[in-house]
Image (cartoon, helix red, strand yellow):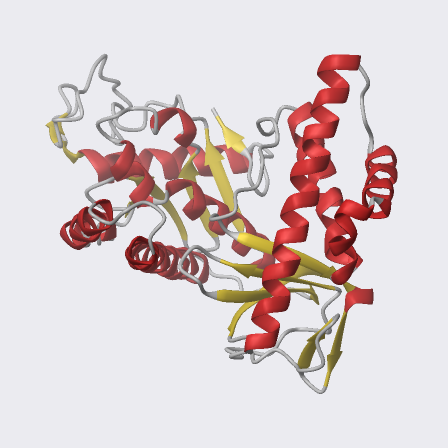
Length: 374
């Protein structure tokens, strides 16, 4: 049994919209206020603040007559924001993330309601301080009653509810098929079977429309309602691009997991590669990091194997037939002939074949799940 989040879009009433706006504001204010206090305590006084001290500071803050409006909303989302902040600091201390940053008013807003702040009854969600249920568009049934609910509003003005539920994964039937995949830009992935996925390039597809809307927004006066409307149009187009990209990633990862018992992929340093100014936009649009992440958890749920090989393995420069390795093979060369065995190679298919061979070798040597083969 594991935890799984089910995300749905919902349409709040006017009263719910006002309540959520107030809740988002209180959560953001408390998060930023405590973050500033913790930072000052550490850098000015040398005191390291834990969660309990931050919680006591919140209690003192709510007693202040100047901030009595914090008591107008449920206290649970506010308290949960401190738990999220503590998790952010833990990730920072352990080197997994950067130092926590302040929440912005015009960025994505969210509030988490624990079990004491919401009610799940007859397939409907009721949140604290609201008598009406959320008008949710159910795309599928959740696997169980939610243990917590997170309500969010994106920059395009859309509301979503994410429910954390108990989920029992079911193993898929065993298939006698393995595949190696090479990630690319002309094609999002190329398989060792010679299949090329293509690349929809959603950012490029909507490039002209996005430039037009951004140009229109730049002509509007700062702070005006017309600029706010233009900004919303830009945000909606960005949301559409992101949704299209995520949909394509989900479909591709699901197809690979459904059809193969073992999937071998190269572990790429996406954060490092995206620093290249000439390729950054294309790499971000390819969604490599999210693609591999989805392969990982979907393989785990289906009880199938995902093997990641070392990023320094010369998959493109190595001949999949005889093992000859080129000293240098520029990206501009898409096809080449091995000087040893005279085999003609498609660069990407050859890389996928080498990835499959290395991945299966690593798996045979004891690497399981997301093992790494050198």
